Length: 164
Image 1 (cartoon, rainbow, N blue to C red):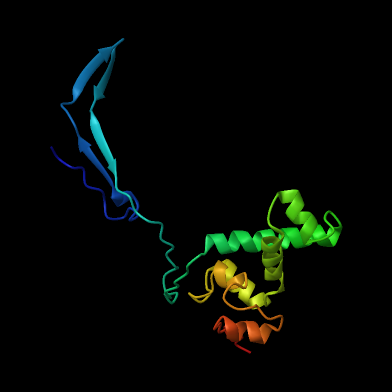
Image 2: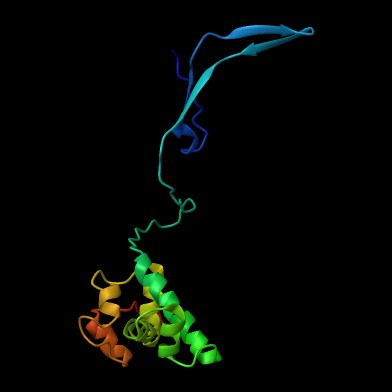
């Protein structure tokens, strides 16, 4: 069996498809029309998505590790805080009763709204330090301070400097 080769001008993604004839071609005649049936086997190779920068742009490697449980919990924290701010819930105790959760856990999660903005941005972009996880954020290892500089020091967080 022959494999059909693709012209080189096609994208790398199209080269990941392999088309192979899987039987003999058959000629069919119907109402004066002639149709050739060629059985094919099409295989797609699994591949990852790749973003390619424009020609001439510098290539940079970016390693990110999205901590989905941490991101989801951070989202809950801000949602719950908004509920308290708008008067939908009076406090953490009422939120705990409403959602059938432990009051202590709700309070731990709500404390995450007091994080420094650059730390929150880094978490959402997947750029947080490896030791910055949900366990550390909820204050289990050490009480998370209110002072943003102390938070950065506690989590060994080095914020990117502005190019001013």
